[in-house]
Amino acid sequence: MQRSRRARFVLPILALLVLTGPSLSQVAPPAGGTPVFPINAHLTTPVSGLERTKATGNVFVVKGPGFQRALHVAIGTTSPDTNVTQLTVLNTVAVSKGDALLATLFIRGRTATGKPARAEFLFERSTDPWTKSATLPIEAYPDPLRWRQVWVAFRSVETYSPGEVMTSVRLAFGPQTVELGGLTVLNYGKSRSLDDLQGFTMNASPLGKATVVLNPRKTKQTMRGFGGNFCQPRYGANEPFDPVGRYTLSNLKVVHARVGVPLERWAPEPGVYKDDGPARASLLQLQEFARRKIPTVASVWEGPEWMLPGRREQNGKVLPLNRYEDCIEAIAQYLVTARDKYGAPVEYFSFNEPDYGVNFRFTPAAMRAFIAKAGPRFESLGLKTKFLVSDTANGSNLYDHARPLLEDKAIARYLGPISFHCWDALGASEEAYRRIAELARKHGKEVWCLEAGHDAALWQAENPWSGWENALRTALAYARTLRLTEASLMDYWTYQDNYPLVTKDGATPYPVFEVMRQMEAVFVPGSRVIEAIATESDVQALATMGPLKGRTAVLLVNPVGTGTVTVTGLPKSAIVAITTSRSGKIGDLRKAKSDAKGSLSLEVPARSVVTVVAGDHKAAARVP
Image (cartoon, rainbow, N blue to C red; front, side):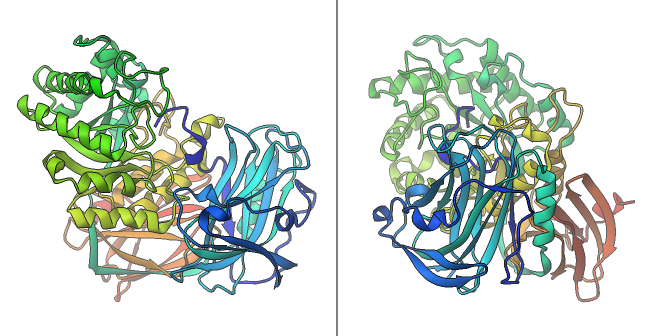
């Protein structure tokens, strides 16, 4: 992660996804909106990149809710990026910064394996840096003949003249047939607030009734728990912990820490190592984590110019072969200093996002060559530090980068867990994320997500940290990542003042902090993730069992309207602690009791995060 994150990993900014319920009738939008582009423009605009995914695109005469024609696209193959094949419609009407907009479209279809078709909606600048106002995943109903209406309420983050912003629908989610109809984007300007439009979409799309079935006989990963990134020294801070970092350490159960190594400050010249400034601050962080018995990963972003040629913070820089030994020695001496001077042995090391190059870029072959040299040098110094496998910029890229490393027996002894960052969690295909779990099982490795978040460019928005949208989408990203990749550890980006959980002075927690505490109560260290099947795809459901005997915990994330969720498979007649967070009300706690069959029905508010902890008397005792 770095502040100049590239656009292709950007996810939602102040946006809301809402999907209609079972009715096939069209829901009309509020009056007063001005169309951003002509009606049916999605039927007259060519779909780009058809040849790159062996796709075909046609306009079919098909009866839908409120329309007679639909765009039909058949994707023939997989691709590395979802925007390889996409529909892009330019605005013909100006849009001003802060305008409230409402988009809607209908989708139906299925993948080649029979699953619901997927797409991704974006409202973005039409030129570099492709600034996003909204980016949201879309999924059809399981029934391929049934139309699903999607609503997206958002606020424009910039001012655009005609032709400067585009509505995009990305379609390259592997082999699938997908149909799109009724695409419109209405601009309400300042006449309606975003809250007004969100209220409309919630009423238009209730969750309804859903059931979540728990199966404790089907277990998955054993959780290490949640940790965080502590990287302010990597950005130049001379103090190890800012007020945000001190607050998170004091108020969260931090089971792991990822520390940024300021290599350019540590090794300003060949063979010169300076234990001062930001480098010393990072070493003091490691010392504090060692004191607290918190295991650590040390990661490198930037390198000194004499070692890594190019501009500071330039992405994609390649370490020259004749500098491998210099780089290895600089890292090794940092790790030795951490161990011998600060009493802080480092468990694992990585280059941050080497697949993309933030800022060291390593192909799998180059990474193998580097590890083959570094591993023996580390061992000769008595270092037990191993390399994370890949630590890629997102989950979709992990498989192709990590597989060659895992298949190389010559470096196997130097490798630790598989690692990736989940900035694409809400937009990546299920197949891409499930392959991570499959790769880990094949090679007997744990899966770690060491930059957990939902939007790598959220820092570009105006103070998004204090809003409920950030909290809700963080929960969705965690839930999807844990469910599909079977990660046992997730480190939030960051537990300091960078994507902060609390105000800069460390005095007031944001809603996302409360959600993190809720999820900590479900995914406690030593618990096992168990199968949890939801009858409605809108609600994200995960569950754990243990580590206390008889303890079962459930996470429910509802991004749509109100509904009732019945959870089955809980301990019978157990005291249950229920925590609900939603917009306007954070951390509402109460207690209930499951019935004699282990069933519990909950009223789930719109756009909420609900946790249920059963069989844990300490959790229940916290509830008034």
